[in-house]
Structure formats: structure tokens, C-alpha cells
Image (cartoon, rainbow, N blue to C red):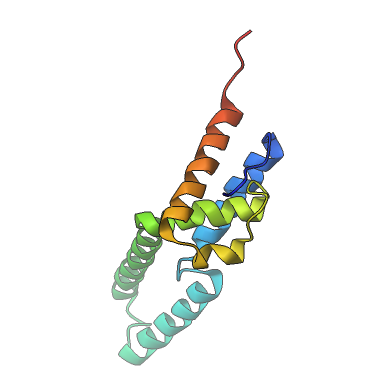
Length: 134
């Protein structure tokens, strides 16, 4: 059985959400390096097509290129359920919210175990935000 840290502090919750965002960003192909490489390829393609001197065509192609990149980023942010649950558990491991599980072990777990661990993480985060009744 996976164990959740006894009491989550603000720093734990912040670390969890940062780890979650970092893992999700790592799942996208749109990284700064990837963007740089895409822009270089785009510029070379424009030069080969003789578009570099046609301002209107250049602006239209650049807008289309930007829309394609934004679409890829948006699509990458939407994960299917199994990957989303895996991200929740990996982020909790990375942030120290799950105390007895290594992030690298998540991929070797059975899906029901990952789902169970994700439920524990979600419950702990909800509990951390509950305001005690006076």
C-alpha cells in the first residue's frame, strides 16, 4: 500500500503542482529547443520558396505556423486518463507527497495500483485545503 505524507504543508502542495506542471511540459514536443529548431526550418523553407521577400505571404505563413504550434501545445496539454493518473502519482513522488514510492517505479506498477495511489494523492490535497471547523 502506498503511503501519503501525514500532513501536507503549503510547500508540499506547491511542490506537487510544480512537479505536475514540469512532468506535463516534458510530455510535449514543444520545448524551447524544439521551437528554435522549428523556426530555423521554417526560415529555410521560406527562403527556398522565395517567400522571404514577399511580406504579405510571409506574415500569412508565420501566422499559420504560430497557429500550428499553439494547437500542438494545446493538444499536448490534454492527456488521456491513464497518462493523467500517472502524472499525478509521479508528481506526488517527486514532491515527496508519497513517502514510500519512487517516481521511476510508477511505470512498472499495475494500472489499478497507480489509480489507487492517485486517489490517495487527490484525497490528501483536498484535505490540505479543508478549513477546520472552529
